[in-house]
Structure formats: C-alpha cells, structure tokens
Length: 302
Picture 1 (cartoon, one colour):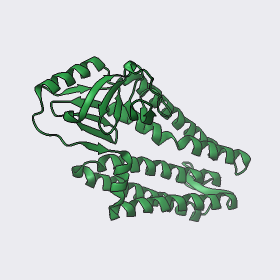
Picture 2: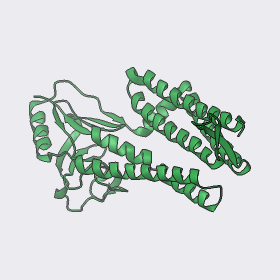
Picture 3: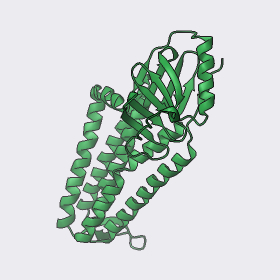
Picture 4: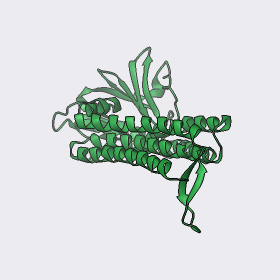
C-alpha cells in the first residue's frame, strides 16, 4: 500500500490569512511614513501606537499562512501523521479507535478561538468526547480521529478518501510498530531554551532591541534634527526630523521576530539546527548594526 497524503483545503485560508498579513504590513509601512513626516507630539504618538499594534499580529498571521501552505495529513500502514507548521502529531494506527465525520455527532462541536478559515486550531472540551484538539482548516470537512488520549479534529480535502485509506491500512495490518509522537511549538521553544547558545542569542537580541527603543525615545524629544542621508548635489549630510529614527528600532524588531520564528522552524530537525543558530546569530548581529547606525547618525554633525 502506498502512502496516502491528504492535504487540507488551502485556497480560502491562504487568501484570508495572507490578505490580513499583507494589510497589517501595509498599515505598518504607512505608520512608518507618517512617523517620519510628523514631529514629536500627539499625532506622532498615535501613529507610533498604530504601527506597533499593527505589527504585533503580523508574525501570528504569517505563521498561520506558512503552516497552512505546508500542512498535510499522511497515512500509511503504520501511522497517521499530522503536519501543521511546528505542530506534528504522529499517531500509530493501532492507537486509533475510530474515524468518523463530525456531522455524525449528536452534540455539535464548538469551534476553537479565532476560527478563521485555514486555521481551526486549539483545544476544546466536548460533553461526549472529552478533550478535543482541532488541527483543521475547513469547518465543512471535519473528521474525528479518536485515540485513548484525546480526539483529534482534522479536515482533509478528501475526507472519504482518508477514511477509506485508513480502513484498507487497518485491514492489511502494520508492517512495523510505530511510536506515538507529539510536537508542539511551545515544546520546540522550551527545547531550544535549554541550549546555552540559543539563550544567549535570544537575550542578546532582546536587550539590543529594548535598548534601541529606549535610546531612540530619548533622542527624539531632545534632538530636533539629525543627519540622515547625503544630498546628491552638494555631498553634504541632509538634516531631517529626529522622529525618523523610530524606523531603526521598529525595523530591527521586525527582523528579530522574523528571524526568531524562522530559527524555530529549522531547530525542529537535528540536521538543520546549525542553520537555526546562524539565523538567530544574524538577527542579533542585525540588531547591533541598527544600534551602531543610530550612534553614527547622532554623532554626525548636522
């Protein structure tokens, strides 16, 4: 029997989560432009808060988009594997008690928090099933996978095909005993935290970004103008409002968060952990370079 790969419905979820991520990114860019165009004051503060509020959920929706793009349910004679971003669940077929459509339930399932298409993720309690974990994309194609530990809710694009493949695999029997495996994003974070090098790189990047934000917030009110760029006609430094310095800490934070998430993705596999450390090290170095850039700007005569 060949391995059966059943992806979840992706088109609608990718569109919605991707559009939200892009819209928030555009809002952050507009906020940057407004920050550089306004002097320190109420308008500057409002745009700063808008930019930070728009930036905060970008990694969340970007991760959901990437996770859905790579998501799949894979079944063979030994196990049913669920891959969803950093979340991995490998269930031996011998541990699966039954698989059936969610619509067969007498008491319907309650959707998890923030049930956007393409990202039905999280835990719920059901009065008949007990603990239920959603790893699904489409509420119209839900399948229940019951194990002794809990019930998993998945949504293959072809539910009937997965159910039939499971029935055939069960009839044919397992070729080799499979081990149950559960990997959560939080587990990867805690596992990486145990590494002294990872802790050093994470904390270094964190303190560099905090220091950069604090430093920029102190410079902007006390220094009306700074040298920022060179005029092509004269070759002299161009004086601009010091509020433009806010670009540096925000851009540094954006790159640091992106690098942190990318590093966690690579850290999942032993053979790619060196790449994870390189990404985290690059993020820390980038934050240091932003700090040095601010130092160069404020020490350059206007």
